[in-house]
Amino acid sequence: MEKIHLELTGVNMDFPTPNGSFRALENVNLKIQKGEFVSIIGHSGCGKSTVLNVIAGLYQATAGGVILNGKEVTVPGPERAMVFQNHSLLPWLTAYENVELAVKTIFKGKKSKSEMREWIEHNMQLVHMEHALDKRPDEISGGMKQRVGIARALAMEPEVLLLDEPFGALDALTRAHLQDSVMEIQADLGNTMMMVTHDVDEAVLLSDRIVMMTNGPAATVGEILEVNLPQPRDRIKVSESTQYNHCRHEVLRFLYERHGKKAEELTEDETIDETVVDSSEKSPVVDFKESQQPKNKVA
Amino acid sequence: MSTQSIESRTFSKADFKAFFVSFAVPILGVLIFLMLWSLLAPKVVTSLGAVPGPKQVYSQFEALVVEHKDERQKQVDFYERQETRNAKKLAKDPEATIKVRKYAGNPTFFDQIITSVVTVMAGFLLASLIAIPIGIVAGLSKTVYAALNPLVQIFKPVSPLAWLPIVTMIVSATYVTSDDAWFDKSFLNSAITVLLCCLWPTIISTAVGVTNVSKDLQNVSHVLRLSWWTHVRKIVLPSAIPMIFTGLRLSLGIAWMVLIAAEMLSQNPGLGKFVWDEFQNGSSNSLGRIMVAVVVIGLIGFLLDRIMLFLQKKVSWDKSVALR
Image (spheres, rainbow over the protein chains, first blue to last red):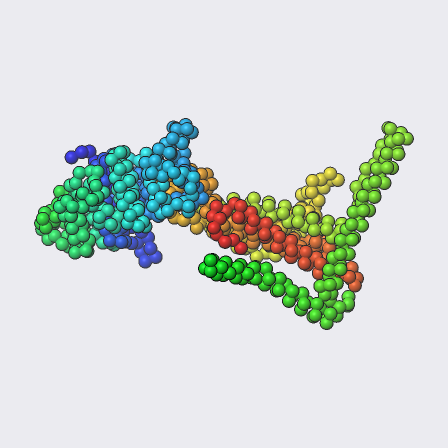
């Protein structure tokens, strides 16, 4: 196995509420390799986005932590760029200026003005938005806004690109175009990408691995499914392959048949002590070999 | 053809309706008010005669214009006389020391308007320069907000008339006027009183606007690791602009009301003094002249608000929002 690039160990996340603290995540363990595309899928409110926010450093884990390249990360940083669910572009800046804001902050003193300009334009070309540099967010469509959001994140030259339901608010056709763009970009740049989604097809099409999360509260990793299809994928060819349909079936089965229940509630043969939070070794389904087990049963 | 004519007819109907609502109805409202005024005013008899109706008030306005022109003419004449006198003196003896005196006539109604507008703008601008930064800091930091909140809440409801004696005493103690001083004491008294009263709405609105910056944009700022200053400039300020302007417009409205009251009470030059002088004067024209002042005060207040609205439209990034 390659060196681990990004690792989550025993991550707990508690939010304070008026009625005491609410445990959103419990003992989340994940190991991600460089250049991997990992999707996190689960029912609404299961804490998918919380995982991403912990990695981004926007939330600080109550217990456990995130290690990137052997260093713990607790605050946001440009090496973990984020594409937000609702684009989150500054409405008072043009597309160019939105990307420029990121570039100016991160490459201050490292790139000259003309280099910055080139870099911004290059990133806008990556997302096919070079025609709308001077448009403001309210003048472009939802898909275009999301493209600019991706360009902004890419322009930070991130090691890990975090995508928080990036295409959730888009229509099916626009979504397909953007998915193709993301695949194209990953093939070009080879970034590690983590995407939160609730779209099964999207997860199977884009991911190397799919992390399926149990329902909250105290959500955790239920199963991890490997998608053994060569990248980059062609959505039409892939849709005919048995592996694709198998993966799709597996995810659907997890989501709807098992309702994302916790691992120990379902697989009696696995001895997992969930009550001992700190024992990360015994945590449910840490690496994907374990996660293969339930899949094999069905196959 | 026929559909086109139908379309154009419905279009003009809509146009007519828009015209009706935006022009005809307001004018009708004003006309009804004027009619009621002219009908009811003569029925109220005071020690200075019957309350004047719109016609008498308008004739008082004309009288004030005439007075103003006369006064200006006197001023021009004065300087002309002074100049010719000095020129004669110099012609006789080039070494002669000549005196240049300032014309010391009574300020007219229109002079008082200018004084008041300048004073209110000075107090308001200074207050805004202080209040907006305080509001931003209070909005960004819960600690600063907690520290400021009791002070703001206590000082906000204080009437200008309560501030005035304190301001007057402090100004006369600390500000020593000479002949070539930049500001008159009276100007400072009025402007500072205005300032003290119109700080609070701007502070509160700005703080609220800053606190309500969207969580998404704050996250963007975190992920981009924007510096504090860039965060304020690029994210906080543009987000808070609408609330800042709400505060500024409230403040300017208060400022204008406060100023008139302060001028009346302290006899500082301005429209307030004009009203008070006319009241003390007690001539048969006084009520009419005060009513002219009332209308003018109202119109200027309205105009000031429109100017703020215009500025808001200029500064605001979202041109699609209907501002009113």
